[in-house]
Image 1 (tube, rainbow, N blue to C red):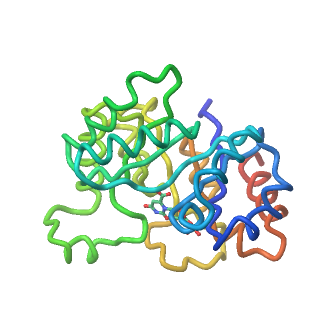
Image 2 (spheres, helix red, strand yellow):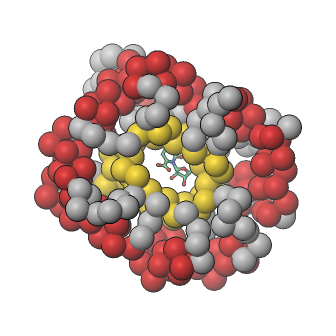
Length: 232
Ligand SMILES: O=C(O)c1cc(=O)[nH]c(=O)n1[C@@H]1O[C@H](COP(=O)(O)O)[C@@H](O)[C@H]1O
């Protein structure tokens, strides 16, 4: 039996006032919440603390990518907020990843530490343009292995790469997949997408879904429909 996938709603709203109407309709035992750059920049750490107080699992998606000392301090600040998961960019390199890992060593219940491999908005031509010579799949695999060697708990990747990473890194390595699009939903800026049903069948632990929920006429109903499709 494959582990059940948890949907994390990407709260990509301009401010807290716009986010609360949806959050108020959600059950913390049914989904997690992702706070990214837009909302964190406007609503700040107190908003994140309030979500934690309300028992939500919070994925703080600030994709830290900086020198090792700075990233270590930033993931420590995230742990102090009580978030469930925090991410960094794998392309920050081994020493940065190891510094982030070491920074969380003293916590009894540290947040899951996850590395972004290749953004799901990128395709092969985007990668070639930034000078990566190997194929997109090979690059994702390379960064996943590096992240695992550095002691991270898992990676962010496209659901299209899930089986390959499970083969390479094992099934306990946590996979977090954005770029999830229900059949017929607009792809927008995402390039490597998969439906929620297909992704859940692969035993991906965390499905990150934003606009198909937040831009729906009734976001809570859109989330409920996606969740029903996962267990159908
Ligand atoms: O780390 C992430 O969450 C992330 C990594 C990635 O490769 N691609 C990606 O889309 N994300 C985030 O996942 C969310 C996807 O949102 P939608 O495309 O609206 O479903 C956004 O908040 C992105 O910032």
